[in-house]
Amino acid sequence: MKIDIITIFPDFFDPFLNTSIIKRGIEDGFLNIKTHQLRDYSSLKHNRIDDTPYGGGAGMLMMFPPFYEAIKTLKSEDAHIIMTSPQGNVFDQKKAIELSKKKHLIILCGHYEGIDARVEDLIDEEISIGNYVLTGGEMPAMIISDAVSRLIPGVIHEESSETDSLQQGWLKYPQYTKPESYEGYRVPEILLSGHHQNIESWRKEQSVKRTLSKRPDLIKMIILTEEEKKILSKVSKE
Ligand SMILES: C[S@@+](CC[C@H](N)C(=O)[O-])C[C@H]1O[C@@H](n2cnc3c(N)ncnc32)[C@H](O)[C@@H]1O
Figure 1 (cartoon, rainbow, N blue to C red):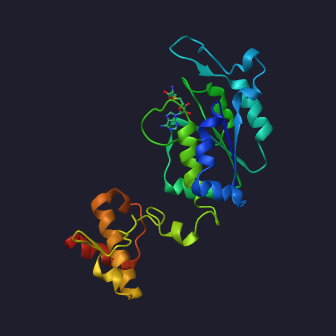
Figure 2: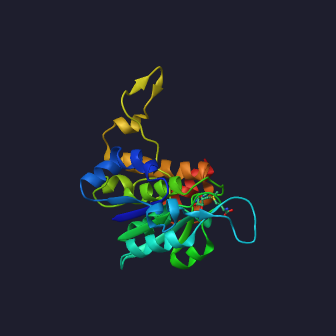
Figure 3: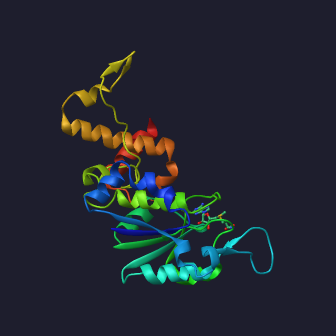
């Protein structure tokens, strides 16, 4: 997976790209994530990239030409171009899965008042990370890149991402690690039983229970199997 991020703050991404799973994914060749300084694509004095909005109004707007030139340089045949924006569809795991199947993402980070609207003609989609307004698109670009990267085969164990919350629609079952008991707080006995089939059934039921109590809104988006219907009916009565 290749991800090119266009930003006026490439340094912002240093800890993200040089820590833990993303760092290893890059070193092992599963990820190719690069930042690109937007100012390098400006032809103006002092590499200026912003100006006042036509028609008046507060703040500065990022100009069209630097984004046009950066996209022209970085675009590949497979490129899928994303503009971070509070006006886009809200990012979720379904979108992360969809994006993880692309070969090349280009992510544009806005700042100030945002980006000249002509850039909308150059992109494939606008993505918001939530219904609030941030100062810039750098954190949204990191969030999108992170969620997509962990779905790329080899970056983490596939089994691990397959059972993650939301991946199959449900929230993940509760998990525990050593010690077995601490100050009276005990790990559920079933997990110590060594009986894999019972553990699987318990986990499935816990997933349904958690989703029903924490995020009931998710359930209507899941195509339920017969087994899941039975579990849901059972836990709904409890
Ligand atoms: C202050 S915002 C611009 C908001 C714009 N004036 C508006 O009202 O739609 C500056 C930049 O931050 C990023 N941004 C802010 N909130 C965001 C969100 N919820 N999701 C994704 N990107 C966001 C975008 O890149 C945006 O261009």
